[in-house]
Every structure is written in C-alpha cells, then in structure tokens.
Amino acid sequence: MQWSLPDSPDPLFDTPLPSLRPANLQPAAEVEVGRLVLKAAEWSPQSHELFPEAARKRAVEVMHLGYLIAWDEERFDSREGAAPELADIWRGFVLPRVVVR
Image (cartoon, rainbow, N blue to C red; front, side, top):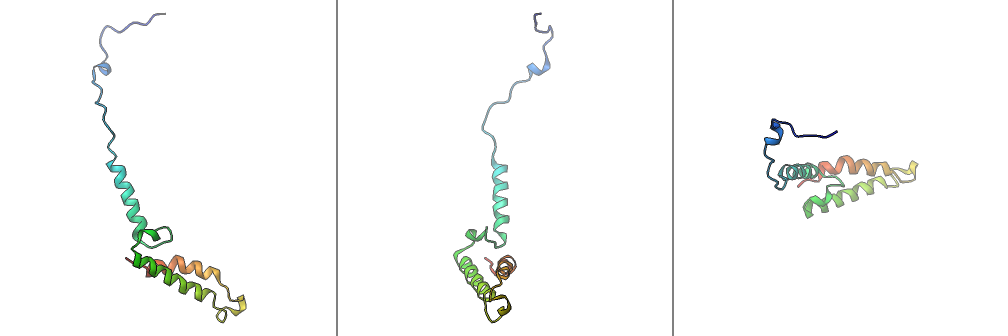
C-alpha cells in the first residue's frame, strides 16, 4: 500500500509554526515569590531564617523561657520535672504570636 499526499492542502499544514523562543518563566517566579512571602508571614521553625536577626534572637530567648517552664521541677514534680509537650506547644502557639518583624 502506498500513501500519497491529498490533492487539496490540509489547513493544518498551512498554519505557520510559532517562532521558538524561551519560555516565559515570570508567572512561575511570581508563584515562588508568593510562596516565600506566605512562608515568611508568621514565625515558625521553617521560616526562622527568613526573619531579621533581632526577631531570630527574640525567638531563641522566648523558646528558652518555654524550656525553663517545661522543665521546672517544682511546677511538675509529679512528672519528675519534665513536660516536653509543653515545649512543643510553646513553639507552635506562643512563638508565632510573640516573634514579629
């Protein structure tokens, strides 16, 4: 069986190909910038490095207070002075509200 070209030209073949040029990556860059802004909006362990030095120092100081409370032997003598879950709660709920830009 032999194939032959049709007598009438196909309109698909009459359409010129678009010129090849680099892809426009600007929308992707805007999405990445947007994600970075959202990530840095509230303090978290993941966004810590995105905060100014003064805010990072404050986060360390406030977390230190959380550890002092969590490991206070007099406060938690029935638990042998350890409440590690309090440190987790402190990190997750107190620090994001205290550490600001």
